[in-house]
Image (cartoon, rainbow over all chains, first blue to last red; front, side, top):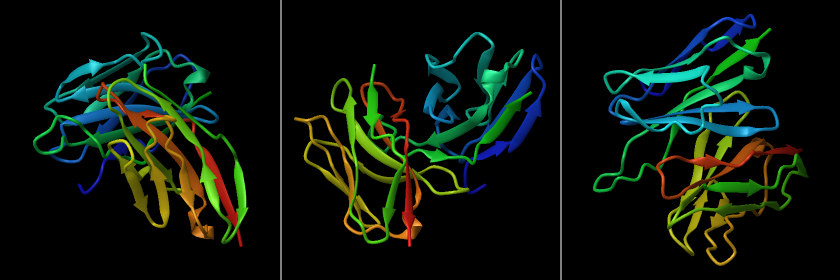
Length: 118
Length: 111
């Protein structure tokens, strides 16, 4: 596809259930990021992948949160035993290193998954 | 770790007014600085960036200058339009690969 695709766009779940959020990055992008956007909290970094490995998972709020990436492409963010405070928009972004350098700059964002935990 | 502090708003202006949204940062090394924008119902997108001290990023009439001495990257526009109504996020990318965002500033421009 032309952009970063996230699914589902909306997810309503009951407290205590597990949820899986999916991100399809732009083809060829090696870096993939997950952020959480809550009212009044701005964009909170969760985890970053370079290829299939996650050099920085410092933002995961608790051990209920995990993420994986396979084949250097699709990523899944899993939240176990969801709590009401997990309600937020979960954003995925991807980017490609500049040629000749290692720094990733421009991030391309998906439209997000709106998660509501009742 | 790296961090960003930006004016939280909300900011409400009349069309053609001057806009400033303040942003200051802390980061290791020689960070790159960014402004991202989120229009209503749309995803985040890059507005402008600056990668070294004294660089000026500009796009769509918006400007921001990388000031290392004051660790600032304030966003300005001389004459805002209704179509500029959006949430604006300042961001820094320091020694690590991750982009750290501020909390966002909601701008509403009235006709």
